[in-house]
Image (tube, rainbow, N blue to C red; front, side, top):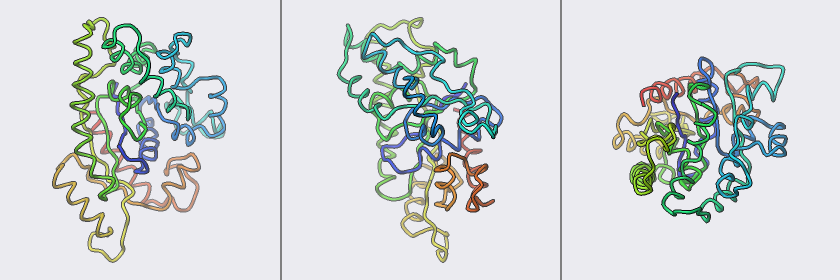
Length: 311
């Protein structure tokens, strides 16, 4: 089983669009579980989302089980099997795609996590950052799924650290402009020094044994790739892109070399429209989901699959 986190400091760079398409693409031939922030819940579940919230069958319960001892760690009941089919029973395009939804209140839970310590402070810091890994162990995810994807919030707080602590790799979608791309270097260093290394320090200092360590905990999270996304086009330009995006993309490739994927995710009309309708571009009935749009998303996902598999 391979686990990947889709993450960037900045919001609005296409994390949810990319996560959604990658999950659907992978599930064509493998069993996929998608998890984490509420944006994807709105896209994938639509009217089913309210029902999940009323039942309190969301990822929030995993974190609430630490903050409130009256809330037990959930099991498989928070997983929506064949989620898109349950939402739209007329269609069954992705029967191997399961989903765990989230609530907007995940931010509230984040505050509770940060302020809650139980017993030994070092052990508590370790426990609260490996809750997702513990949950994946409890549902025997390695036997149930081939891939687990985390659509992370635009931050590296404790909730996102949970995703990174059990991910084999992370993917950074980035708009090639100054604001969106300048944090890539800082983020890559942060994952190494402030998340991976800190977690290893906490584990060692708290004397967590091998038997006590969740099997889904990953000591080192690798960068699978940087995805140029929502890139603006300019018809008369030699590159076909706007000047600023051309220049920044060249800088990214110069600095990060092969870490930047080959396919450029252009700002095509059709991608946001399909996601807004709750479908990947391959199944969207709108006229804007042209062959070029579908091929672009297929190429991006195929390259990411190769990188995830080798992480």
